[in-house]
Image (tube, rainbow, N blue to C red):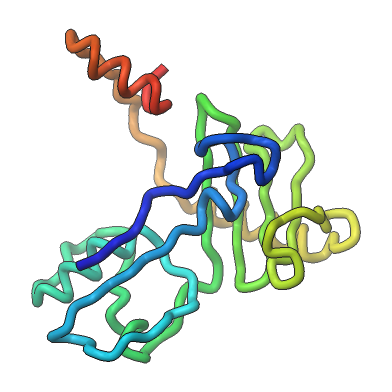
Length: 185
């Protein structure tokens, strides 16, 4: 059994209500619980950052199969059983029509940057400020520049975006549900 979530909720933490508008921790840091008694019987907490992309490869390996070649993500089984560690950096993005943001998170620092780069970047020291209340971009410019360069390298390595998919349905109730959830405009 695996339990996780696709996002958290901002409940006036940074002046907003809902999700999908920011990349603050209350929205992007979600729990993941796994139980698979035949593989690991004793409970343990893994503190390393992992990704939702890792869910599928993990479940495939736990079921005894080989993951498909070319998948994003990796099996978390070695991490769960005491092997290799988690990622050095996690990259996040919030794409249009919502505010277009990208972020990089390390074990200590988090940089949030608008994609258009016209607005100010925000830098947070998650060790001393886990609620992201104190922007350190001006006082920690070396960290901000390093993380911005990491974001640039990550973005440059991404494949070209696929063509947009347009939603069309005669089901007005479904369309309204999807619109109310923010999945369609």
